[in-house]
Image (cartoon, rainbow, N blue to C red; front, side, top):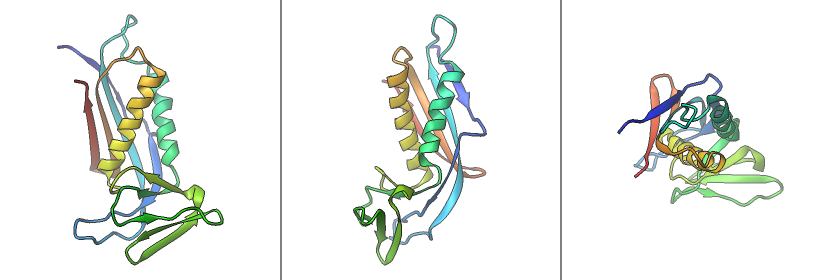
Length: 164
């Protein structure tokens, strides 16, 4: 089977965010941040114009997803011990064991993941990108999608989708 693809690694596919990882033994990193970079590969069939998808149309979609995470504290909403409190006076509290973080409500993003690893960030971005592509470009048949999130040079978490 033949297929074609786009490989996107634009300088502006990035976001800065604070997080901490929770390790299998229950210990956690200190709160810190990264300047993440996002890399995307989209494979599919060619349309009548010889395109999988116009670069000019897909780049803003990736950029929007990056922007949605930029300059936020990212917390895992599905970790069994991490608790995110309801908004009180415009602030939310994140608690993990003895640690407490209080911040303005708009500074926090709670993702449907069990940890804020680069692998889980790549998964969240990849699934959201796939939804956006299907919604905005219904004639595009994505056969494969790969999203990588680099938290530091030489280290990337990867999500892969393959249509069945």
